[in-house]
Length: 488
Picture (tube, one colour):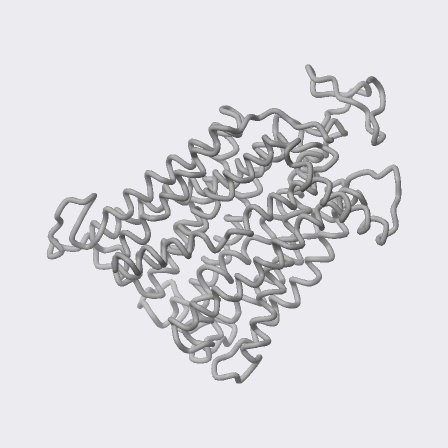
């Protein structure tokens, strides 16, 4: 078929990447976004990913567990329960939202809607105080659930825009760029918070302020609570380029919201029933489910393992987060390069393999062992700084840096893989299933590590059990091909 396709878009000439009007085409055959539009799409990762780094990993979640709940063990359990509830909601609704978007066409209104939910809820975490002096534990729990669900739903619509925004030969690069920018944004905020709120008064360095800036009261944990307002304001400001400069999907047939919902719900049921017709996509989503759960477990337990084995405190863990964020930026770029040069499937397999090797190396390091070989803990320290002062600690940091690079690369490659193989007309619906495959079994990694640790009474064996998930995911990728499925 020449000229105009079934959704009103000029078809691409496959050999040139241009349509008959001489316009550069995207991976869907539509006109690609301008360079500024493509960058604005990637900048949304810069806007939203600091929530993951600041709130769910390094700053707010430890504060919540240790100070708001008041008991680290109970706090970790409560945090796990909160994320489990959010995961169930996401698993139930994400595929339907994707199908609704495919029926209604436009993605940006949905993204704006979920950002409008997230921003005030994240800002409100400022009032998450110990001893129920601010928000109650129930209110904080509800806020985190709402934010987590809205965050994941915004990703469904943002991810589904990728193949219509980027030219086919830049889809891997743009996906990796988004991940790199997301980590870079979080890194900037972490460095600022370290300088302005965390280090003053802790280390006697002349270039640091003598007290936390802007009147922040460290004794009231405001240096941790401020992560909420900073993240919320950052999210709103840097969502604007996507809304203003990245083109949305053009719709030729307008549906009312009710019609879009009705058609979307029927569409996802049809897709689920007909997954046997999308066996390649289904095989990929199953493989990703395992290796993604493994990667998530590494992020959750990497710092826990280090804190337990090396007795790292809050300052060391904050610097640890900054270092990993720096190299995770490179991971997004490396992921894009691997994808464009090896293809998505091979890039994913390289990333899984290197991550698995890194896990094996990480568990081989303790204060008295280096790669399973004895090491004298009495060996003089490398320097007098109060962090990463021993050879095993510094070696562990280097190994985990490599893990961070390839986990980030795998995230970028995974998104690109689905954009390459899913049917164009069902892109958001399949990104809903993609979200489902990343959240429906998100309990597997923590459950496996917890069970293995309890049975063996060893952090090392518990952390190493993640390799089981990585191996299953790697094996599953052997049965996946890169051919795009046609809509049934």
